[in-house]
Amino acid sequence: MNKIPMTVEGFNRLHEELKRLKSTDRPAIIRAIAEARTHGDLAENAEYHAARERQSFIEGRLAELEDKIARAEVIDTSKLSGSAIKFGATVTLADEETDEEQTFRIVGEDEADIRNGRLSVTSPLARALIGKGEGDSVEVSTPRGNKSYEIVTVGFGEAPARRRRPSTAKPAKRATHR
Image (tube, rainbow, N blue to C red; front, side, top):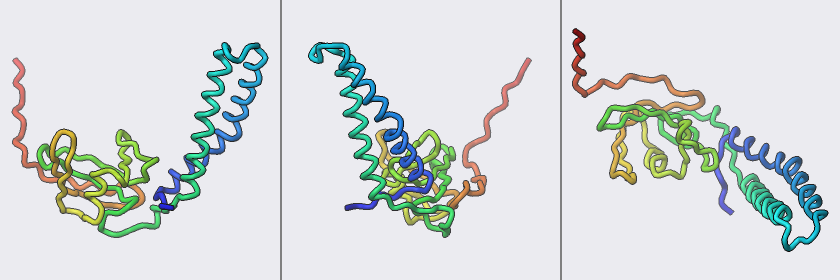
């Protein structure tokens, strides 16, 4: 049985969803099925079939959450430190082509949300970053081709202090107004 790494926040989110499904959603769907049964012929009862389908989804999600919670390896990232990237690290990367910087926190698979800067530990980028440190470069194969990034900062807990990277781009010409 493989352990699933996750942060304390990720574990709490899964636990809250499990609690909500058991205490609110499951009883509501049981009531909906009972109500739909009172409407007569089950073979032609769309409400009944929709409620049963929803019940099936809820039961499947409950089983999935219980399994993940049982296999969870909860890692308190506030107690981590070091200069090498590992699970829980907050990393600022600079695209070596455009100098554009992005900051990510490496989290568990269920916590990943790239739009909010949370990168799954199982993603190709996170796997390339693990074990590296500030100043190192990594190359990652993406759907748009290979991308190279320089690791600007590595931190644990809160976002690392941002260090401005010297720009190699030419300064933009100023527009003149008449």
